[in-house]
Image (cartoon, rainbow, N blue to C red; front, side, top):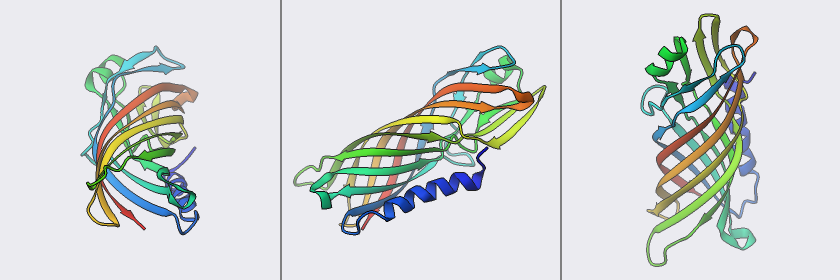
Length: 220
């Protein structure tokens, strides 16, 4: 099982890794929030009938959806528009009322985060004569959900290692100064979630999260 402190330690370790890259490289740290949703997904439960879940993102309810990202642009290697990023996002989903009625469960959510940690390749395309910088990226990593299930046979309320996730993103940044910029982007993650619930049962589902992010970056 992976608890909150270990999940945060993983994110911190990834950002520390970026900090050890060559000092002459262009580094960046970004924070962002936004509006995140997820379409329906099929739920497989080892000791109960399968069902289909409808999800609500509730991006602005506590705990809110947010993310932090560290980026290394490879200008010191002669590739100033190619970068690597380590991205941690606190995505979340709640089963809707129809899903709870159909399953007979009183709670089913990953509301303290699916918690996505990914390593990504980025490519930026500065527009000559402007301060706008479009970019795209893709990568892979892990999901660390906080599993919250309450049903007749028991309750699960803990962090676990869910499995793999893949990520794609596209956006545009605006450079206010040499060091500061703001950005708007789309970011999608597809996560394979395989976790344990009460009574020795397992739960599997594949969750696609879609997010429109707004954030700021500091480069040094």
